[in-house]
Image: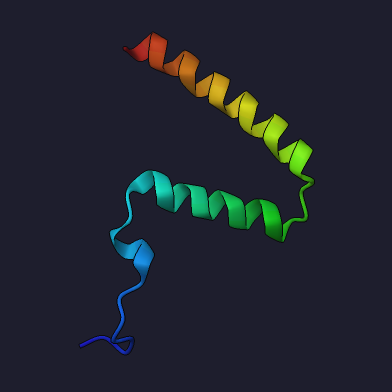
Length: 56
C-alpha cells in the first residue's frame, strides 16, 4: 500500500502530458521569459518535425 492514498494524476497521464509538465516546470523554475520560451519551443518543434520527415 502506498503512503499516498490518492494516486498522482500524472502517473496515468500520457507521455506527452508528463513531458509538457516537466518542460513547464523547468522553464518556470528558471524564470524564462514567456517570449523566449515560445521562441525556443518553436525551434524544438521545427527540429522534431524535421526528424519525423527523415525517419518517416
